[in-house]
Length: 71
Image: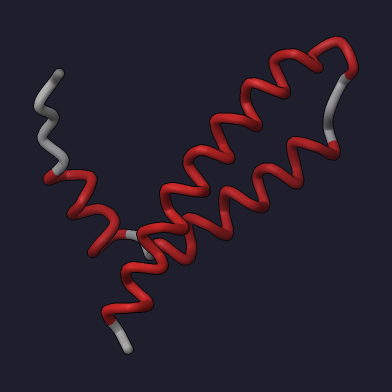
């Protein structure tokens, strides 16, 4: 297992961009991507959307943590 250093990522989420904004952007990206879907790229689309959903779930978990800490 690799021991990644997430300091820069953590710094970005805590200072540069809000988790709420990242979630909104990923949801908007998914919507925009869906509207521009070309049937020839259906398999790639499925893989891309699966990755976006993975990221969105992770950032929503962070958002819940932030919301819980702000209560």
